Amino acid sequence: MRRTIFEPEHEQFRESARRFFQKEVGPHGERWREQGSVDREAFLKAGEQGFLLMWADPEYGGAGISDFRYEQILIEENGRWGESGFFMTLHSRLVAPYLGHLGTPEQKKRLLPRCVSGEAILGIAMTEPGAGSDLAGMKTRAEDRGDHWLLNGSKTYISNGQIGDVFIVAARTDPARKHGLSLFIVERGMEGFRRGRNLKKMGLKAQDTSELFFNDVRVPKENVLGEAGKGFQYLTTFLAEERLITAVGSLQAARTAFEITLEFVKERKAFGQPVGTFQNSRFKLADMQAQIDALQCFIDQCVMEHNAGRLDSVTAAEAKLLTTELEGRVVDECVQLHGGAGYMDEYAISRLYTGARISRIFAGSNEIMREIIGRSLDLDDRKLPKGS
Image (cartoon, rainbow, N blue to C red; front, side, top):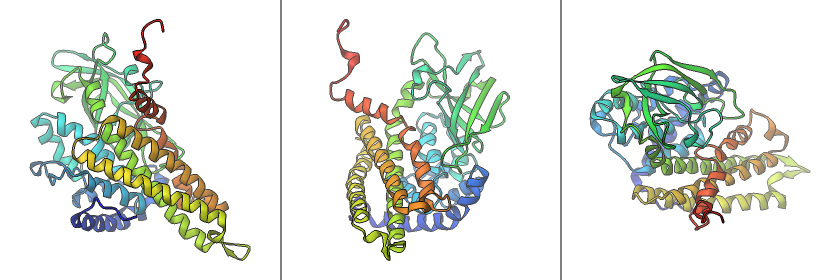
């Protein structure tokens, strides 16, 4: 189905992005998966192309382009031709906006140019052992010691955990308040800041996912991000875009799985004819095509709403829920249509299958998405009269 949200300049950008991912990212995927992380040079090369933090002001080296369609194109082209473990969008659109929106002029001047160039790789540290999606259950703490904050605790499942240079760390600063959190900028080399092992995962093998430990880390007052005590509010402010990013990526993964499977079933033969010509195969692929096209219209509209500043948390939750569930169904069907080959890691569909399983968990689990949507329908059990 023809997509109508892109202008000629977007299509030109797509061609440039496609060439980049085909040349600089895709060919290195197997090696990156074996070593458990992407090369730092990948971020530097993306920075040279102007693909990182495109929204940043020119004074920091960015292009000053806030149009999310450009990031959407990068996500889609990386999903089709690059490597799913290359988390440049996490760097550019999930973490860096905290610096852009909350950072002081001094913080921006010191950090943003290095992030735009790819010299400094970003990560965000929220999740803790035992807490999961429950930010209010966070135990990492920071104490105000006058001229600095003293940070103690641990985080887990942190993307870019091994290669990252600058992390935004959420910590409890007001024990008396359930949501008394603050955000801190923790940088490579700070005394007491230590990385754990590169965690072994089911999928996304090229993405380094790590534990982070903070043992009496002295965080200078100038590394507080935003206003102390408002961390929970800040974290929830950026959730809609995070879920839109996940939705765009999951839908592209479903489309990629569909496209490579369509090619495969046209070539693979059984009983003397291509597998794709059997009615079962045709019907399954027809269902996938229809569902992918339908959701693409919804996601494209969400992107335009986001550009206009109107994407609300409920709609973002719907986008994340529907696309990640579709991704799971499509990759499963596509493995089946590949037959035994689909179980072999040398085939891309195998990696798409294992990579897809996390989509229904991160950026807020799909159970949380259903809670958000359900409560918006005036079905919030928290509002029941006491004693009901």
